Amino acid sequence: MLFNSIDFAVFLPIVFVLYWGVFQRSLRARNIFLIITGCVFYGWWDWRFLGLLFFTAAVDYFVALSMSRTEVRGRQKLLMGISISANLGLLGFFKYYDFFLQNFVEAFSLLGQPIDVRALNIVLPVGISFYTFQSLSYTFDVYRKQLPAVKDASIFFAFVSFFPQLLAGPIERARNMLPQFSSPRVFDQAMAYDGVRQMLWGLFKKVVIADNCAAIVNPIFADHGAYEGGTLMLALVLFAFQIYCDFSGYSDIAIGCARLLGFNLMRNFAYPYFSRDIAEFWRRWHISLSTWFRDYLYIPLGGSRHGQGRTVRNVMIIFVVSGFWHGANWTFIAWGAANGILLIMLLLRDKHHTMKGTVAEGRMFPTLKETVQMLLTFILTCFVWTFFRAESMTQVGEVFSTIFSPSLFQFSVPGSLRDLVFASSGIGVMLVLEWIARERQYGLQLDGIFNRPTRYGIYYGLVAMLILMAPLTGGEFIYFQF
Image (cartoon, rainbow, N blue to C red; front, side):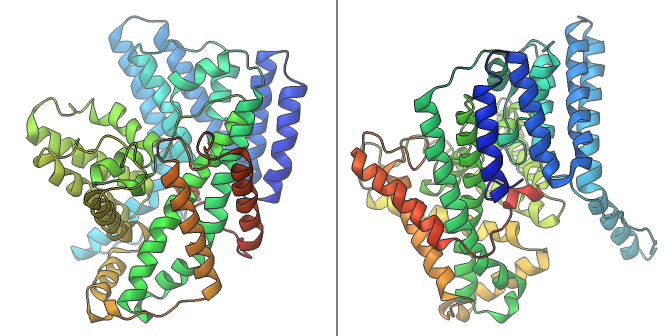
């Protein structure tokens, strides 16, 4: 079920009324109700894959219980191995089987030994990368004795199947969410209103900006050889806003929806395009995944504790793995490696922790130096996004060769001028509001900045833009494919 669909517009009010009106007296009944809503929400796409979701949850639930009942470290390691194998085994089969098979066949062909093996064309279950990592983090925490095992199955299954962030995150931690599922929840009107505002902000970014950008970007990349370098550069800039508004828009809707039900999800984006270097960008982009890799891969590998050489190795590992997590294609691996190299260049000069505060903190406008830093970082990320958007490494090379040619100064308006005007208008509004609210959690947290009439004028203005500027055919969220 899509957040930007009529189905969800009907589904959410029903859930809200039943959750607060019917299931308010029993914590277990509420959690069971949330499990049911998660099943409906996920099963709306394809109910047959619900079995994978509950298999993952069941394995980790029983593994964690078993680990809590023994003090024998060897047995605990064996159980942890079962959890890792089950989770990553399923993820690897559904997401990477055809990729490895294809590369295996191509490798033998290069050696002059062609083999005929058919791909299975496996359907990738929506959200499997997200709920797998979320469930796996629980067994890691129990194994490390950072969290007690949950005995009430309804609490843990509600945590894994919680519908607001089930399909595309944020990838929540059991340490943050399990206590919330274990405690009585009382309706908080201020919290609910804030949730609605954040959902509005997410819908605005998705529908007005991301979908209108997609109407321009997708045709250009589908026939990139027909366009000039200037037009391809425009496509990269618009894709940078498309991917940000699509994914952060989903996160905003998920966080806001959870707040309607009395839950606090972790922040997933912190205005990354106001970053002054690539290290700051990665502290602000997809925070739930970045911190997951930091806690469960980078630190266990040794982090930065064993010298510069090991640190460089560990940084490159987590970025390559992060790229591969995004998709079974060499372009994603190259995207991760490119980001890793850029970060390592800062690390080698000990410049990777210099930009920790908010840009222009306490000031309305940035300095000239900060402005240049933000622009250069944004342009750099646009080029790196090429690997993420391209279908193949060949396409990456062709796009770059066209951009870095005299045709960079040639430009044509692709597709409908309407789409470009709508996308540009939405981007302008977003950048202004996010800059104003850059020291807050999201772009519509304007209390104390504007008076009430001005705030409501902004809210109604965004609603009007949603109605008037929505593309005729809205798209799925990009991260559903991961």
